[in-house]
Length: 333
Image (cartoon, rainbow, N blue to C red; front, side):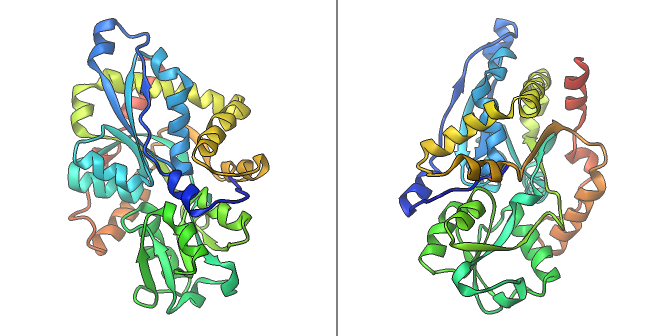
């Protein structure tokens, strides 16, 4: 998925992060089962969270007999923190946040929803003339500390591109505040994701210096709390069946999907062309499932996080990655 936006002021950017609560009704489970299970669904208001937003609006959860209470935040690591605190049952984020959430609160992955390596980038202010990461020595870089993108860039991508920790000033802020900071020239660059990178490009404010695609395809997991998994295994299977229903729309009816997601950003004050929006959407590959070859990938991230002292130990990946629910959803068991 790809997004380009024509113009956006500070107030519009802040408005785009407003938390939203959506409530889905009952569906085709037995009345007792439907009445007993409510999914507290977290999602981020950046492009990573838009597949989940589409699921919420699609009606497929209702058809599967599920109720939802939905909680919007600027980025997935905040959803992870809510889940560790048991305020939310499910949410999407990348591998590093999942591993931190597992370490702090036993969170587990029940699906891979999308891959988003093209969406994460280091973007420099265009007026600085910066064209490579090493040019940012001594400069100010905005970063949402604790996010998966932030961790991957700081621990892996920037060092690989000639910029080490301590050689630049990290300015901590939410991703939705970074465009305003760039416009105000209080930072020289930002580590950010869509749609904010596309906004910066479209407005002539920023230039992408390096993105994640070369280093990490970044699978985005749907995670769940261990409490919810233990109490509601059948509901999880039905939830994932709804995702497989939505998957067909992403593959077979992309215009329908794009219209729903475009309406979300438009409702939050974004002014964008449909062409720009299409560009941003194209940087996300939505394919709900659960590849069975992710343990080495997660092992690598765990080793990086352990070295950085962000987790206490490397977990058994069989306790982190739980593909059996998606397997049941696909077979109809």
